[in-house]
Length: 396
Image (cartoon, rainbow, N blue to C red; front, side, top):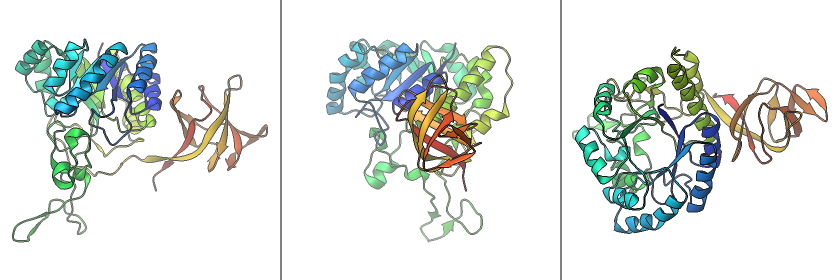
């Protein structure tokens, strides 16, 4: 069985991943991973996260994949006994010293894509160091992955969905050079997502992307990876895990992408594979920069940095109460809501629940729309007081 590995930036994302079929979840530990600009987990939060994930028969991996100096290694070393006690299933690391420390502390090691592992000899060496799994370089083709997986002494994992960047497997110096903020220490300001134009020494502007007089181009910003059409080919290579990128993304993104890939994987494993166009439609509802197949077949195509999702979510309210027998939630609205709207309910335990509004009540009376009031809404699953309500609206 191939593992479906989902990202989580917070507890609502963990719940969203679990409820939509993730076999494993990877999270970032404060101060040691490549998403320093978003929420990460403290040691106490990792303890709680591990309990929740294990209670749902899934695995938890902790990212510690930055470039580490001596002081960083000492900081990491001080945390490893706690991670072992929490029964974390593996550490995702890129530094050789971190591999050594993790193995010494009885932790399984997954070697990060940052290590840019692209050949079998490297896998053999990493096995001697004690690694259990390697996330292969993003720059490998499908045929190259198949060849490596067939010879590998370790488990192999590949990315199948999410952001790509212009750097070799994420190792980039552009943010550090321009802003003194190191991508390799989790501080990337993403200058590659800007529109650039090239000017030669003699002030000739080199038009990279023509169109309506706009000589700027997103030459450093590739489209997002999306391999949903090729799930059978990926699984048939013999790889052990399919990984979704997105530790900076919210719970509704995690829920949607995990659910779609779960369905696609299960369809193939049951022997009834048939690609569904609806999968792409669903994936386009959440954040994306357009879709591409990365290096799997040719090479990544240029794409805009902005969100290309056809819909955005707007905060409209909060859950006050949930009535189990009635299958309804009482919501405090601070915006408009009407029958037929699509809402997203998100919370620490709820995760991300998407509902089409089919019933609204105010003071026990059915209504077609409501605004800035308390209203009852039918829901298909349990929600909790404090959960936030978003309305999905078409981008204007």
